[in-house]
Length: 483
Image (tube, rainbow, N blue to C red; front, side, top):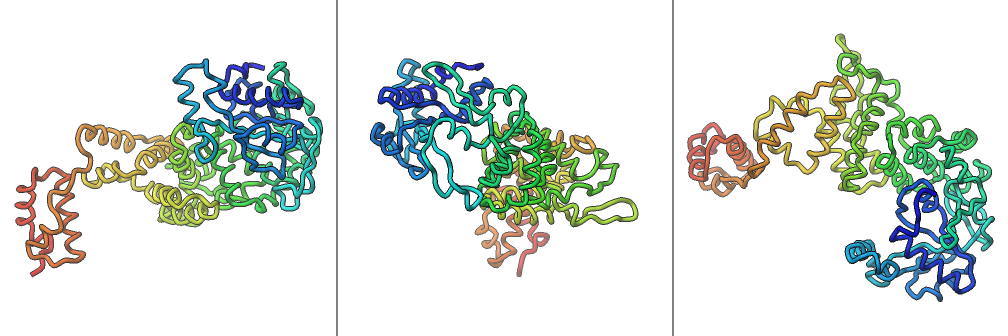
């Protein structure tokens, strides 16, 4: 093991739970992903504990606990973040408090899943077992999804408990199911997407028999709720070392055509070589995804905006492709793709605000071809839009993965820098009431004139309100003054 888990602040709380269960005469171990991550030298994001103590006993032993999955043997146990790590310093204590769950228990509690050893009954819906039977360590390991997630760790003795060959598979860098892969995927169809995610985030390969089972079972992925599919897909896009390669894996396993047939349709769609020497729309998209600058390091929502915009920015091309006399053209593919993206993202149950932002980014991405011909007022509105950072990054990726011409990207960066020292969008000097006072009847024309004056203001044609009013009066006839 490359990392001592006892040095982790989160592990200290988990060890507190293990120690208490041991003092009461029960078995208790760390389980699952935290063990995998510790072996790989990664900092675990959370710690799960398994025990032979029954849920009712766990609830009694730990007053600040919640029976979130009692029927399945799972209890959420709260541990005071300040107690197990008191000697680690005030700054660390405050950071732990910030991690605490505030919806139940103490505001300084960190919660851990404590599960009773079990075996699962039949899975009727391809997602959840109908029942569970409490069991022992070996039986519990045998019911888990992948070998690398089915190991246990004894934090008291400092020993790995591996009953399924998970350590060997970690060494080989492979994703393999525990036992029969077809059975594992029939039990829980979402495990097929999880296999791709683990392979993509750990830079592992999916073992041959496991991959073949995914291909056989891929048609059932649609039985999983759209929300769960979206969660896994989003994590793949944000956490994969190379999201484009992960997309290739989803396609080769038959999963992509089931969850995103519109993306699968991009494969083989030709593009004009003078603009896209890299190849078809699929190849272009894969290259862009692989070149993303770690969107997961940004705010999760903004990372998703960029990732889905890259994935779907050219989704409208297959439907709009026309072989013109000079070359292949994709008339209005950005607008068409924005509408398609909205439908796709609604199907995946993304929040409406995210759908609106991503659709806007996709629908707007071809405008960047014309930025050097835009009026200054138009440019200022462009760079102050909430979505601009993602639009600019999409444009950079789009250019780098095709023709390589970065002139518009450089121009926009320079333009933005030129306005960093001043208010990007100052308040308008002329109001609608000012325009009405000149004799213009209230209605759409007032808004039209107000926009024209504001554009002139942004372009620096006048300074101050008095000069703006003089300009307005001088331009009355040109601006459409009504009698």
